[in-house]
Length: 164
Picture (spheres, rainbow, N blue to C red):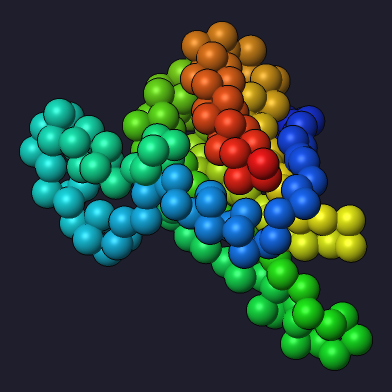
């Protein structure tokens, strides 16, 4: 049995924009494919080029797509003492980017796709992301780390735009 210690960098910022606007800006920039149909198209692809076309058609302007959306605020708001609380977890990524990382570090498949957390607090809307490069740093693989840093840049650019 092996245990690896992973130190994760949490990248975050606070926006003065309304929660709904921040989330809408993020969702507008990411592809939102029908995941059942997407899975069928991936399975039907006969060549790598076909698979690439399927993925590229599913990603948005950010080169990312939505895998899952969890409205955590819906659960949190059910407790009366907590009051209304807006929080959403977006699981986003790009299978082509994941492939590039896992070619070098198979464990990267444990961290991709990534999570974006958007939650409303008294001081504004917090937008957080755990950097992929921090997950992969301990594996000492320069090629995987370069891909992870590029992914971090894409996600962070998206979140800066959503916050602005």
